[in-house]
Length: 177
Ligand SMILES: Cc1cc2nc3c(=O)[nH]c(=O)nc-3n(C[C@H](O)[C@H](O)[C@H](O)COP(=O)(O)O)c2cc1C
Image: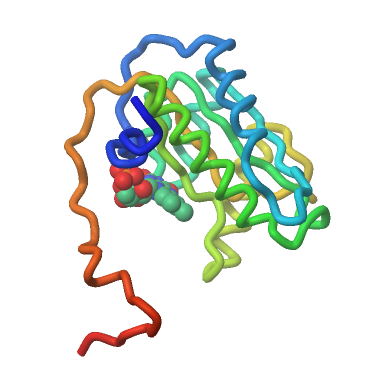
């Protein structure tokens, strides 16, 4: 698949075959994440990969919105020390999406589990505390998201996307009544 096809066809994958994902394949995803752009080229992200069943099960308990983690054969937590860059949320998000695309390009599926919510500090702290504890991540390090990785059980159909006419403005932002 070429890059444009991958962008158009990628979907979040939340059910997986039981087939394990090899260490080499997981390493390759993180290897590709190194090519993400980062603010001021700080490259501060770190990646904690797990294939441990108990850890994956524990990750699935963090929130109702990531219960599907329990069936994933692997996970990648994206971690960053917020003291290292003011762009910690942006940098980790860019790397996360790059991993999602790289996974899709290889016939793998990925899904994003949010561990940080800018409008809910208490819930963010609860999730951060849990994910840090599961993966032995220091308290000073943020983990805005964890990605589940696995071979898709099935490929969801393309999602309806916003119409270009509703989101693209030339020269001036337009408020539609
Ligand atoms: C910032 C962000 C946070 C997300 N958090 C979750 C999550 O916690 N749980 C979940 O099931 N999906 C999560 N998703 C996946 C979105 O729901 C999904 O990308 C969206 O519905 C579009 O579907 P698609 O990825 O198949 O195109 C998240 C996606 C993004 C970009």
